[in-house]
Image (cartoon, rainbow, N blue to C red; front, side, top):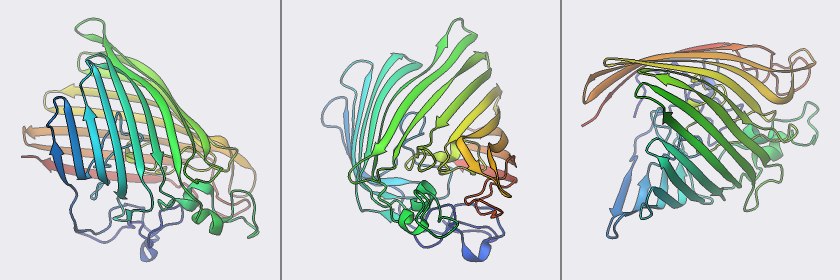
Length: 371
């Protein structure tokens, strides 16, 4: 994968992924995290010698549930892949058991992380063909995923050792963590035309395998709506909580581009946490699929604002897209996103504008051919 044009900030800065990571000579451009890379995305061997079981060994993509916690981030030019072993078991009726032991992860920046492992337990019970109850546990002993300051905060204004704000220490803070949760999700039909949509999910994240003690936060998503024919509308709220401004719930292996809007303002959660209330609409017409959503984004605890004082309103974002299936092998998609800043967030108190989440617009045109 190579760039056609180099006039954008691919966010590469050595091996770091944090709030201040930038391509040094492209600071005036919005971030598009797609660096140059040539390599192998997937290379694995499957063994299916036992009925209803699949053992996979090698480099592989993994997508679980709604890819909030584990996903391949396939939207990016370089997707996220894992090296290790996974087992998918469907021996029990209406039940899927997914287990994984993964010793390396290649991130979308092309950085290969190998200083730990990710253990996966995902148990899904299908209440109906379109409804499921999932219990999961994700145990990461990777001590450095490159997110140090993005997770624990930047340097204190006075250069001191303010709790949770010392940039040098925070960049090297151990990022080992575990997430344990439960998810109820589905589409429940009442008539051939009318369907109910619902989601209820809760998860807890704490330190694991020597991880920093500040890793202590929770997550929930609640929402629902209705679908009639080819049209659907729903309202949801998602919270990634803050541990008193020291740390917020993080999803280091998730497809984060799909959440909190597409403009990618919140690929990591600010230490003050994030509450996203949003409405989503879909409509299918022939070979076209239309999509729109609107997000109101607030913090879980107050943050410093430019010029002094505190705020809790990060901003709003709306997104719109149309997908056209040209034929069974080819589809194209046009997407637009607009983020509007509200309270002027700053990493440091006072007039310092570091970390401001500024107004941004992005437009994407995607085409995919499968064979």
